[in-house]
Image 1 (cartoon, rainbow, N blue to C red):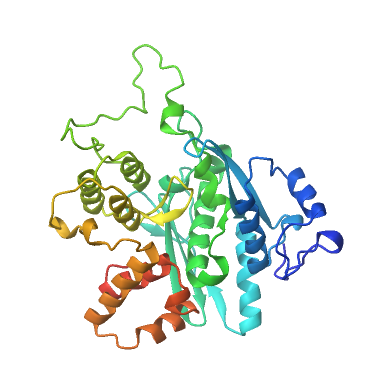
Image 2 (cartoon, one colour):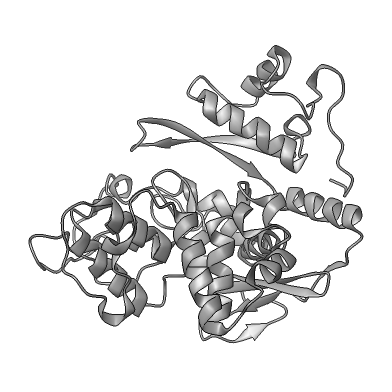
Length: 370
């Protein structure tokens, strides 16, 4: 795939003013694996995304991938591209804006925290870091192998992740960095490498395998008894997604606060997790939102710096919360031209930005950015 974006011609060409898929386009999409489980909203959102990114589904630059979702009771479809699709968008934006663009050397990290610019061991790295340079600004991102690796029912990496683990995790880090550098152009679409873990067997599915006599079942996790009013929280040595899953099962705000406290102690609040609706969010923001959804009163206070979820105003969206926190951080930091600095950094005003970009700048202002 080159850096020039070429849309399919003839009856399959996507017009900028198009508001629905034509019968010809719909027929080809169906042949690509988009079946009757897809909703009209998912198809409409996919069309809008193709128009905004100018990636062509009929040239296999972008896909709508369906995955079974037990919560939804059907197959849920998510837009997806490859890392080449991200590069196409980035190069196109740079060509149109006459900005500069480049990368620093990719780095890989071993389990002891040592960074290397080439990965030679047979085992997979613990993480990869990619830094994108756009118009003189650095946009760095770190992807942890354990959070993105695709596994089978026995928890073993898939063939691609086993044989090319360093390459796969580097693609994930590059996608994260490019999305930071081009938030408006790449919002809402994720790369195949980032979404590989979405196909991992769920914990309950893993238990379907037979455990041999005298064999320890690797999928069992002991839970402390805890307060019977709340869900038991796992003894943690697991990634951020487990905290999000526990929050899904929580029955009151007290349980969510306990989960938040443990996630904060583990330093995982800034990690990306996948919600039940297949959205990618930061764990901390998701826990706050989840706590607000539960109406059972929880004890007051904000011990250990945990936000008091009861103080979130009714009807506030994640973007509203993120903007309020951002403006508070800017005021404490003495930044009087927040709106100007934000638009210069992200290429769009705060009113049009997503919660993720606002939370990222908040971390920068508070000195908690990685």
